[in-house]
Length: 282
Length: 294
Image 1 (cartoon, rainbow over the protein chains, first blue to last red):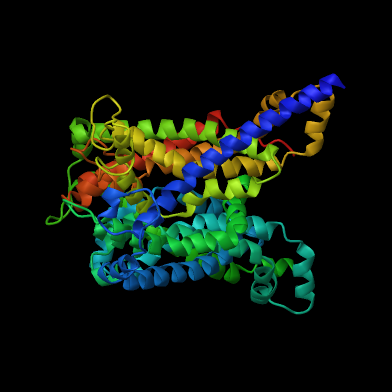
Image 2: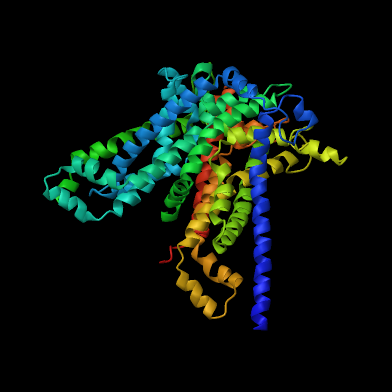
């Protein structure tokens, strides 16, 4: 009895320490973001006089200014166009390839799978210059298509990887039944396989979207025209060589990350599943 | 049925688009990159074959050496710190019930945010007069120049950036480990506890060996990720002051798109690619073991 009590007390202390530690760490994670939110609502002088507290008066003007001066409207639209197009095509092309690799029977399927998987190891930097030269030649420089193509290509390996797992785990009877009902291979894919892999598609779609929404390097290299810039690139407009207007820049950053935060809050569990699903199976 | 699944035309139609895209946007450019790296090539001239000269000048390039040093430091630091911290957090979170989801989601949050945006935020926090230093000044402490002090073999800005990267990406490793740990059957632990093992002992003798394949995966993801690292550095220091926080990716960007030395930048790209392949190979060879049946 005595020992039980003792170990009970001990485990309670350990638990408290653990929760204190976790909470402190959570503060380290959230504080910078909250601080940024506060500063984005202050006026320029307040950063120097009272940088920490709640804003005296909410300066919503910062947001309107950032929105207009940073051309964030156009940037958001461009980001949405690029990300949504990439998303749709990567799901379609990825699912088709994954279906052929995971479900259909042919000799080279393993070889092709390896070919796609190499893409996971290749850093985008080493194709940057050739792509830049080619795209300039064929008029895809300063063109959103020039962003969509590489984004699409680099999101394919992960999409295919996760979806192959999905298609492989589907019971074969499903397809046999469809086949007996007179379905051809295309009906099998579009009417049976695709609807059944909704979770997988959703998860890969979210990942593709988040990754491309945040992409900076390609967007910087392939686009120089202000009217074609995406969100991550537009943000650095607020950094000046001599002084940076932090209140407005932070307002712009908040505008840029709010969509991701909303998506994350709604689907955090699915995102987490998706990001781990691929790696766990490997 | 079998005939249906062997339909060659359908297979070609299904795999075709992906394959063409992959070849045109990835495979062919890699080959071009290798060729350009052997050429004298800039914005005005046509590529002219010069053999290994670019690679030889890479070896003599001081900035390249700084970039290589920083990239390798960054990779080793990320691999080790993310392994320890990620495992630690995963192990703790798997052992608590209340608030697991909340903490998990909070620690993972920065992973989905744009590192370009977060880089700008951290630039403010570590700026000379604002952010942390403003706070330290309240106590009469003069804070260091976080992003400008260039003394030491690994300078302060690189360390600061490495910690920011740990802050941003440790959630990913944590998540991968948690997924793997939750796949281990409860009965294994129960048997161990009946045999009198403590929680610590169970962690080291059961959890750790069983998640070894995941350690390999997470480590290769970390290493490749940190070799490609660009956004945070570019927005926090722009690789300055005086190239002291240059890494391979930023060096490639500067050489290729500020000085338009395409051949030279391609050589950096090839070095980067080779490093990625070597690291993946080493990790898979030495850390990865066959998956245990679970």
